[in-house]
Amino acid sequence: MEEKKLDLNSIIGFILIFGILIWIMYQNKPSEAQIAAEKAKKELVAQKDAQTKAAALSPNAAPIAAIVGDSAQLALAQKTLGGFAYSATLASAKEGFTTIENEKVILKIANKGGFIVEATLKNLEKFQKGSGKLVELIKNNNANLNIQLQTTDNRTLNTKDLYFEPSLTKIGADQILSMKLKAGANEFLEYKYILKPNDYMIGFDLRSQGLNKVLNTAKPLDLEWSMKTYRNEKSISYEDRYTDIRYEYEEGKNNSTGLGKDTEDNPIKVSYIAFKQHFFSTILLTDKPFETSKLHSTKLVVDETIDTVFTKQLKANVPLAFSNGELNYKMNWYIGPSDYKTLKGYDKNLEKIIPLGWGIFGWINMFIFIPLFGFLSTTLGLSLGIAIIIFTILIKVAMSPITFKSFLSQAKMKVLRPEITELGEKFKKDPMKKQQETMKLYNKAGVNPMAGCIPALIQLPFMYASFQFFPSAYELRQKSFLWADDLSSFDAVVQLPFHIPLYGNHISLFPILASIAIFFYMKMTSGDQQMAAPQQEGMPDMAKMMKYMIYISPVMMLIFFNSYGAGLSLYNFISNLITIGIMIVIKRYFIDSDKIHAQIQENKLKEPKKQGKFQRKLQEVMEQAEAEKARKAKK
Image 1 (cartoon, rainbow, N blue to C red):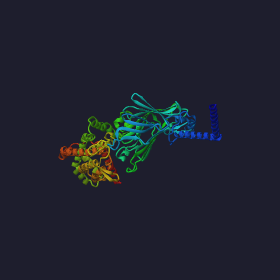
Image 2: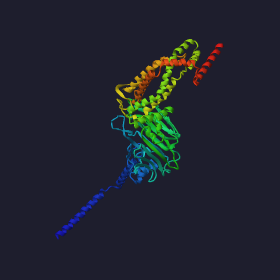
Image 3: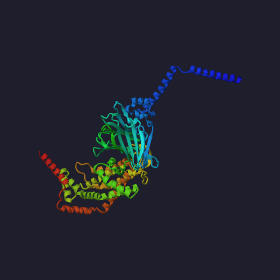
Image 4: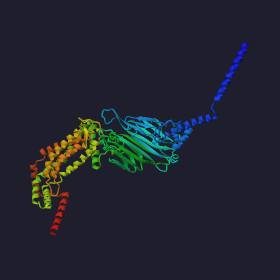
């Protein structure tokens, strides 16, 4: 009976305790006002989160991923992004990158903007030879690709601020990276990158699908591509000299924006745009030419002692035209060396971006210098320094017949000098008569006064072509010879603690040797030239000018070539040495002044040769001038 009472008491006690707990919970439950406040607080936090996620896709905002399927956030994102709010609901709406590479390049493509944010060339060292660092043409936001989107609800969006969804696949050995900016499950703007094995050329297809209701297709979209070009060579001023925008337009024409401080071109029907650096280029090609374009180049090297990172700011704006309400462009990126043979291999006229000179200068480089140098350096496998020396010898030997004619003409003029001087004294008071008699003497002796100039003029195009060829020869980059560790840059043997205007802060040895060689060459030839060409009435004193040029030319070469590539200075040094040698051989073994004098005297006894067109025209001009003078004298 006691046990039953105890159990009953226990039960009653538990009931009372449970009732008390229920009463306490009831008394402490939040009021309706508190519940409403808490609910409002949670909604506010959710709203702020959604706004932050949407703002992540607006210009200059930090990326925060949105939640798939959140209709509230999607609605909020639509206020900022309109039709492209769907892209904010994807997992790819955050900072992310996809890397693709082959044997030539490593490319890093960002989710944000969908463009290449890093481009590294494999197996190519930077300007510090032996550093092991690879050439990076694109890095640290130095390049940008953006399409300005005009939507049907009057919004202006920039693709560089929006997030693309990446998808990497393979077809055979080709890597295909699709980057899609989505407005819906099947509505998107796509950048498709196609990377083939062992190739610098990257396929780049740009197309849209189902966006004709999202985008305003009444006018083309503006695509802007820009790049601050990094310094990759030892001399930034030298590299800057060969950095500009080059382009092909109007079905095969080629041009550049030039090397000014701030330059702009607006070509039409553009088929490619090249951001060309000294030895590397980034080129955008299109199968469907851009109808118009705006190309702008800004020089960033004002003071080479301070401006040591970038060379130029390059920008290109082109229109993307709609076709049947959609975009569809088959394009390519070339990211690689500015090498003539490599570029020519693509058969797209890309080799035209190499500045080989216009007209005959370019022809000499394309059909003589490049094949010959390629044969010596590649086919025969000679070191680049030896190849330059043999190349120079072959060119000078090939030009030796012209050199011989020039020296022979000088020798004939030298023999005739006493008689020309005598005519000068005889007709001292009648310059016109002196000129006429001098021309008659030349005709009788069978001497052409222009014969010494013509060979020199023939050699000039070859000399100018060499000034274009060696600075553009990619194969010289970081190839050493003797004390020069890089034939494409200056061969400094002394580094100065200060900067000399026009000269630089170093002393290069090959320019010194080339200056010495040209000094002795001019010294040896100036005497003959002065004796061969007596001063004419009313004409500059050539003897005095040549005397000055003997000293001016070497000094100019010394200053001008100090910061140029060692390969060009080596060529000029060897060229002048060979010319001196040829001149000594010709003078000693082929030109006999006594024989020339005897031949001239013999020619005088013969019937005068028929005058050439130039001599005849000159004679007519002098006779007309003489007649006019006589007519005025009678008055």
